Amino acid sequence: MLRKIGRLFVIKTRFEAFLIIYALALGSTARGSAYLEQFPGVGGQLLFLATTGAVFLAGAKMLDCIRLEKEVAELRARVPEDRAD
Image (cartoon, rainbow, N blue to C red; front, side, top):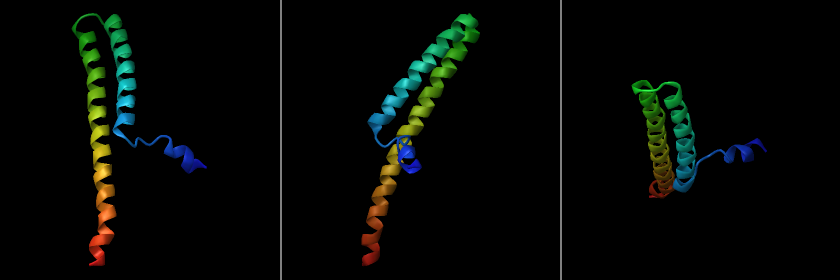
């Protein structure tokens, strides 16, 4: 039962990753605009940049991991064929 629930939290496709990246971006821009109100000037702008930059880094890592998991699955599927020879 816990395994079925755990599978809900696994990102399997690029589309799912883009949806999560979009949600993270919405949250980070909301937080960044709050920083701009709390800290006017360069300090608020730097904090806004940091919140949006974190989304870019996390999104790139998610997309790289999905690509890597796909390649690993392809290699694992190919290994039994190689050992049969």
